[in-house]
Image 1 (cartoon, rainbow, N blue to C red):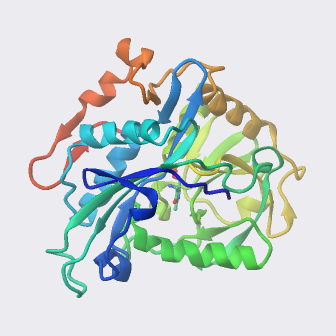
Image 2 (cartoon, rainbow, N blue to C red):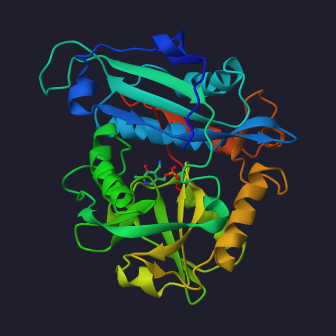
Length: 342
Ligand code: PMP
């Protein structure tokens, strides 16, 4: 993973130099993991210029994550939307990664988060392929983790909260020390859940399966994009509880996520997946996905927001429909979407 530095980070309304973007050591977030965040990619589109992928959907999830943890984001949706576009321009970036984080800052110590200020920062920096430069084509080797995802009665999986990633770190470290790129966790019932930072898909007898929202997954935006593209390609998709066994019997397995995009999995617990190479369904979905991002295919769903504000899809009304459904919630929730997941 190659995390290069950016130049400027937006912190509560101010652009702060990368090296000066600091918070107090006694901030609530440092001790109790009190943050919600997003990982967002911007692509260098040949016609549109640098364009953020599904920016509105990521921001909607950020406000939703904060809402679950009773954190009131003091900035309107549209302002944060602009800040993200500005972050790309101000840092003189093309393709890059954007990291908004909402966190509770310093007041005094104690678990009770009420009264601790809710602060917001947005960083942008260059970022390559999460699981290595060759992973998109060659795929990765993974294991089933001995750690389970937390149950729905323990932590709210639909909130992308910093503290939840302690569980993900245990999965990741176990995988790495045992020589795997990543681990896949089961849910508390023993059904497939997800990777430490990815959703998981498998292909079995021509049908595309992925664990449903009841398996303690983060409802990934790349997962949704993958399901949308699969339907467009005429592939039957099923969101359901999946036994671990399916990982070993599947013809193809792959990860989806902002960081990994669509990455083939070529072995699970040292058992080859299918032929041990990227399969045809995975390849077709990658072509469809990357095609939208590199301009080979039209942006049919208004997924791209050009940072320079020159989105032809928007002019044609494709994204304004999605925007129009983001309605302000006056009582402490920032904004909230009434649109169903695609
Ligand atoms: N699950 C977890 C635990 C994640 O951290 C991520 C990355 N945000 C995903 C799934 C994939 O979500 P997305 O496609 O929205 O990046």
